[in-house]
Image (cartoon, rainbow, N blue to C red; front, side, top):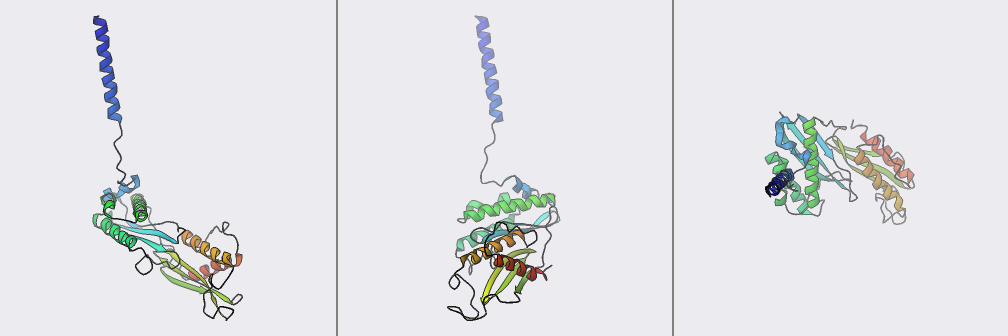
Length: 267
């Protein structure tokens, strides 16, 4: 009888010990609103490497993208500038070129919060209503910038800032091709390719821009749009992969030639 009681007592003790050990190993609940691993660099500003850091996302199907620049001085965050841009003009979204005022307000608020606190984990994303996509992109890009700053992966501008233009030497079938390229922070932020009428024709006057309203060959517009995105994403035409862009070969070639010509004075 005593042996049975002793065995029962030992069993209870072992069970309790196992239960206690398992309890200690339970993971701490994760707060989904907290920054990710790469975003915690902002909590240790003194470990950041001085310099300029930049991250640019790919152009979306809607023709816009995000870009942000971080400045670090004396190991401390000096300033962050996050914005969203339109790929054709290279302009940042504002009240005159973007219909959703709420999105613009969110960008301003997040920039102000971060530059005030200098700590991504202290930014109150819940206090900013709307523009969920913008909030997510801001958090992701800023986290990447802080990670780069903690490793000293500084950014060197590729081109001189400015607006550059080029025109074809000759017109083709009554249209003269031209391009405008905008560079900001050493990055190509906008490419506007157009073909302008140099002679009157049926439904077309001199100075008209080629469009779906006055030109029936749609692939030419699709190719121009695809090239525009590709060049901004690639930040230039060097090693440009155009294999995925089919049709309107002349348009594709002309865009590349004119962009190269425009950027020749930007280096």
